[in-house]
Image 1 (cartoon, one colour):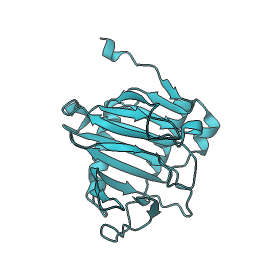
Image 2 (image 1 turned 90 degrees about the vertical axis):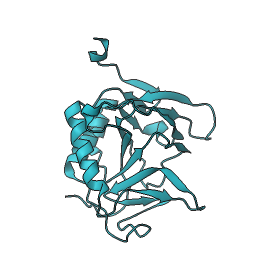
Image 3 (image 1 turned 45 degrees about the vertical axis):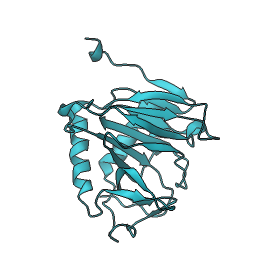
Length: 223
């Protein structure tokens, strides 16, 4: 019975807010279906190549703008040269609702206009090292949505990849927003609890993480 009681939002650090269970099952299933469609192309999901020759263990597909380390482009020149799928207007509205829920600031929510999303798929072996999201020219918040397997999410500080940091669990349906003083915190995923997903979400195994961002680049590309 306690699982049916909404858990309160928690500010992990100034501007970094965790909202457990924000997405209902219907919303999660809709997002899973959308992500499956985006994963097939026009630029398919892939393991991103890193500048020093390695590859990321998570698989990524992008919409709105194509991300590769340190830059955004309209076309995926490192994959197949095609233009990525458009960023849909309904995702803009979802991002605004997320910012409003996290911060309770109607003006900030109304002004929030994400134009890209990185969609990462984690299997049980995938990890994401500590990093900052700083390839954007805008300092607007990052909105992160989790679906599927629960993960350990490590929230650090803005100066170093090492301690101090806080580990929390992000479960299916959870919202995490980081902006303001925490916009450039180091963060990562050191562990995924394989097999913890609820098949009712439409994802029987693995974890989807959708991060909406404002690139600050010229020219919106929506549908």
